[in-house]
Length: 371
Ligand SMILES: NC(=O)c1ccc[n+]([C@@H]2O[C@H](COP(=O)([O-])OP(=O)(O)OC[C@H]3O[C@@H](n4cnc5c(N)ncnc54)[C@H](OP(=O)(O)O)[C@@H]3O)[C@@H](O)[C@H]2O)c1
Image (cartoon, rainbow, N blue to C red; front, side, top):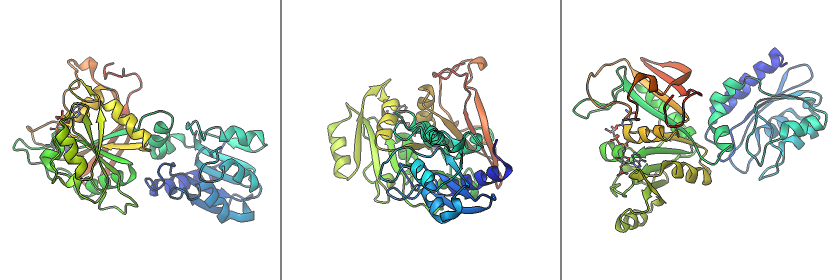
């Protein structure tokens, strides 16, 4: 069983990891803390941008000889493969560490098995330590690493009665500054930010991470079956890379015009009248988008939900009422209360006057959104 000192070290490792999310794609942003034989912290590390060292290596280098006979506490199972950097299991063994404590297992087929390899060479290994807390930080990356599509979080901001705009269409600003800054943090942590063409036409968003020290901008993705995105949209400016997902029967002149404007166009199958969303998430994962952030609107979010493709929801609720105006979510095919899509709340945080609720679909829901 993990000791109190090891659990405190795991909390610190998670803190290190959370503070740098979005900086090490395609690698997970892992945190690591090294304890010497007496339980004193002698090294800390976080995964460096691609091509740089993994968290374990950084922490062990900081610890030097003091790691011998000690413990390394890591948020994710140490990797067991040699990619751009050295295998973490070998580095740990070489440092003479006696015990490895980690939070989540690595499902990535090319890197998994590190825990077993360490046990095989006589290292004491304990897994699953603060796993629920670790999942809040690294869960999206881990989910995407174990399958062929990106992890998707749908975010929305609404009044307490679930409206995202007033009846006249005005919607800025429903939530306060802290909630808005939090959205920019989540954009910075994501590998891609997605919106529907309806949101581009209505709001002309730039979709960049501002109000937050982002080390790079996420890929901006507009789901736009017929390539209607206006060429002067802010989402096409040069501040970040943009991908427009169109259908295979979209007008050629629109596709050409978008490409000539320097935009990447992904051609997807048409499914139920629109771009195929499962194909889109698979395509994104193929280009190393592990963590995707859907920012609306209600129509596209409903389609993702109906397809069972939303992994996590983040709702920002402002203490205001509108009574009329568009709802946060479009039709998801539910007709009676017994069919409602049940969620499990995993976090509730107050941000100034607003409330952020993070939830995941309950495990007993069927993929089509019905119980
Ligand atoms: N408060 C918030 O959090 C928030 C966030 C975002 C937006 N909004 C508001 O929401 C409004 C826009 O929402 P919206 O519902 O009209 O637009 P939307 O959801 O952004 O876009 C809908 C469009 O996406 C396209 N699309 C492509 N593939 C699709 C698929 N598989 N399923 C469904 N749609 C697909 C469709 O047009 P094609 O068939 O032509 O592709 C569809 O009309 C704006 O007023 C905006 O202010 C609020």
